[in-house]
Amino acid sequence: MRVPAVLLRHRVAIEPYAGESAYGPVYGPAVPEVPALVDERPRMVRAADGRQLVASATVITAPDVECPAGSRLTLPSGRTTTALAVAHHTAPGLPVPACLEVSCE
Image (cartoon, rainbow, N blue to C red; front, top):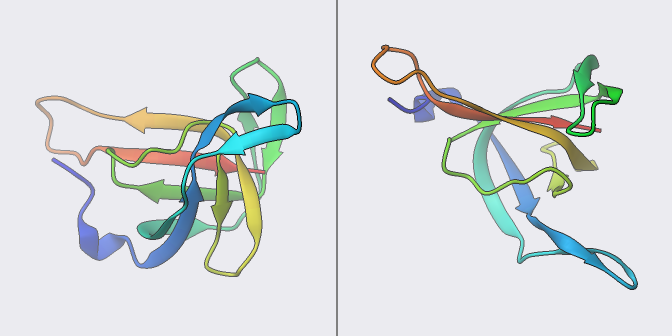
């Protein structure tokens, strides 16, 4: 089961992180108007390297959205931010929705 589309009331733009170049981070083509639920409230998260960071926004979206850590997101407020940590939530066999949670800097 996927997160119901009716709950994804916001729209964000995602530029998937593709790696590093000699000139800095490289991003894939932007995907505009991705349905999401955005919570712009600070909270503590743990990054992939183990550091504890303060995330200024959390974005919930469909489980098949491509948004690796390091991706650039444009929130509904117009603020551009970077994905600090990404969590795939699934519960096979249980009646709870699968989703992708992105913690943003």
